[in-house]
Image (cartoon, rainbow, N blue to C red; front, side, top):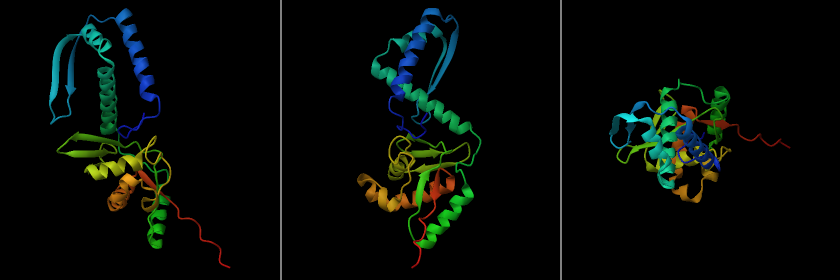
Length: 215
């Protein structure tokens, strides 16, 4: 599962959709669905919630199974997002960098050279970028304690930097050399943001290239 919104491996969503539909079909055929359930859904708009009590389980599954392709896809995306958000908010604080001491040392070496560091998404980090609502902007959630509020420009940069199957694709990059054209106007924002992401442990800093031997 990818943890940056919209950053999913090719074919992932289609596979989950196919398996979910097969499971629903099987449940409707042989499942014990006579019980009634309470449903509470957060809409994400100003904290509003949709609540329904005593809904027959079979009625819910039949409604989902018979929904249109677009409705089913949107519901699946919402569910995946909700599960990722719950996981991020409940997970204990962790160190995302494989070797934080080395990254700190590498960052100091780049600063001594007066150059932009070479960054890479930390292999252990699972950041989640979500939009709460249009007024509040974006929130990058690292774990249950670490969060970073971003505006639209910062969110665009974060999506690219932290992309695992898109954007930087989990590969090394330098802000002053590798930003795509559509983000070049945000270079100053990107430089500052990458430092914040490094401090949060979701980006690690790779060492500068070795000096050429003197002749």
